[in-house]
Amino acid sequence: MSTADETITLSPNYNQDGLIAAIAQDVGSKEILMLAWMNKEALEKTIETGEAYYWSRSRSELWHKGATSGAVQKVYELRIDCDQDAVLLLVTQEGAGACHTGRKTCFYRRIESGENGAVLSFTETK
Amino acid sequence: MSTADETITLSPNYNQDGLIAAIAQDVGSKEILMLAWMNKEALEKTIETGEAYYWSRSRSELWHKGATSGAVQKVYELRIDCDQDAVLLLVTQEGAGACHTGRKTCFYRRIESGENGAVLSFTETK
Image (cartoon, rainbow over all chains, first blue to last red):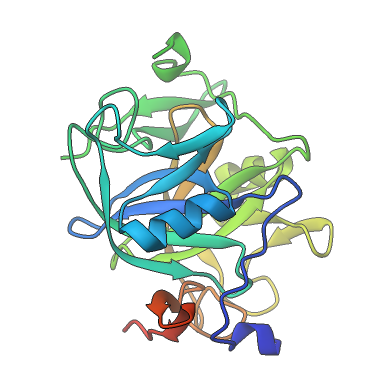
C-alpha cells in the first residue's frame, strides 16, 4: 500500500500512449458493456459533459460515443482504481447497445474448453 | 462489422507487450473488482485451472491471484469482447477482497467535479 491508494487527488496514470483503460458498466443491470480507452481530453470531456468520451485508437481521434449512432452513454458515476490506471463508468446506455455489432454488450461470447482447446460460444444477455 | 465479430475461434489480440486487458466482476453482486492484464500463459492457465491468473506488470511475472494472500478468484465464466482485445472474468472472490488495500474492489473512489477541478471521494461498497 502507498499514500497514492488513499489520495483524493485525481492523477490518472496514462500509459506510454497517453491512454487509460475505461470500463463501461450499465448502472441498472450491472452488465459490463465495453472496454475502451480515454486520453486526457476524453476523460475531461466525460467529467465535464456527463456523457462518455473515448479515444478511438483505430481512428486516432476523440470519440463522443453515440454521437453518430445514437448509442450515447449517460454517465451516472465515474470511478478510478487504486493505482489510477483504470476508470469505471456507471452509465445508462441509449440506443441499441454499446457494441458496434448492434448488441447491448461487446462481451457476447464465452470462452469454453473444447476437446481441441478453447472455443467461443455466443451468449445473448437479456 | 467483420467476420471476426462472429467467429467462434479464440484468437486474442494481444497488444505490443503481449498482453490483453482482463476485467474481474463478482458473479453474485456484479460489482467490478479490478482490471488487470493477462499474457498468453495467464489466459491459458485461467482456462485450464478455473482460477484467475494475470501477468504482473510491476513484477514481470505470472501472477496466480491470491496464491499468497488467499484472495483467489474462482472463475465462473470467461468472456471475450467483439474484437478480442479484452476478457471478462465472472468470479467468486475469496479472502478479504480483490484489492491490495484490503478492499473488495479496486474501484473505491469516485471522480467528482469540485470548484477547482475534479477530486476523488471514497465510496465503500458493501
